[in-house]
Image (cartoon, rainbow, N blue to C red; front, side, top):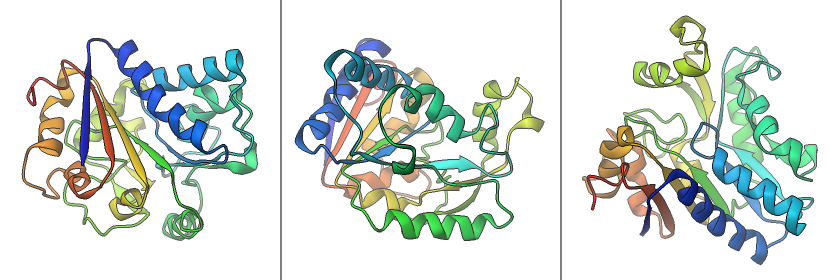
Length: 243
């Protein structure tokens, strides 16, 4: 079931997303958080850091699981999602390093690493899973055509995703990884609550596909139609086709 909230600006979207995240943390000090990368959640992470510094909200008992990681670049690469999460969040809160889980994409056998990650996340119940949405309707790196029963796996990235990520790699498509270890749709759907944030006109079609179109692997986010608790926070541009 979707609860859709529409705000005017990115800053307002981020603050609203933080309210949802904070409610989970207030209810459960040892919450299991599913986290995401990309430009969209940075504002939310800044709100979490501010709250931690100003109000003392602690993450020392929190467990985190990230959605995905590129295959073929080391963890310390400037554009790895491991680096991103530390730069944008973990370096500024008190979540212990051994409570932080980011898929490993630099090993010799990514498929085995994906299976190991799935086995680890199955030991827990994710209390809230943060998601963005790709311009083609993908969640995590579950590109169009990914089966809804998929678990953590190695995904081949669509050209549109590679194009979208070029800006992080000096606008050079040849630098962008073409594969990623990603939580599958079934993995994501096991979370108790899902928080999906989307901003910008380039996400409007994907948001429509998720909320209003018939459920289809053509828009993997449409799988969320079957989840009982999904909060969707949009700016007006992303919500343009569902108003």
